[in-house]
Image (cartoon, rainbow, N blue to C red):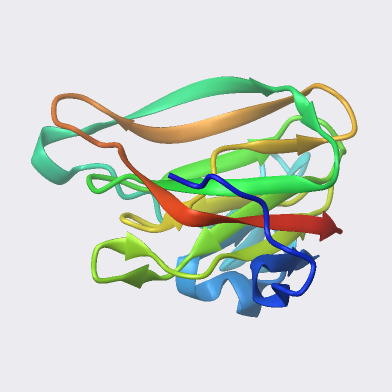
Length: 175
């Protein structure tokens, strides 16, 4: 369990959130925004632009089914302490903001079944993320105001949540 904040000289435990980009986030899933569409085409008699195939929804393992939720995130103020991570072994999980507000995205590589050192990203309004199956990530961190997110993830039988605490916490000081 994380029981202390990083000491002043413990700089490897201080995170600076970087802008969310397609390449930076690629090891962890997909960035959901119109610029990342596989194809763009007009539909509905030319009244609607379709930005096609923005994320790979992966929920079918062990009889899973897709479900859509709305999560309402209370805003966090900086600095934000990261003491734990979670992952979903049976499916992906997508977060698409319903407001034009930034939010924090914190992910980590897997190191022998445990989360490794985290990376922090700032998603700007209009960007969403799709965490790949088994990707360590922090629960939702809204910024500024109460924010709603459309969340697409896995429903059905099976344990699809694993949590792990860091021995020492990390702190996101700036975005």
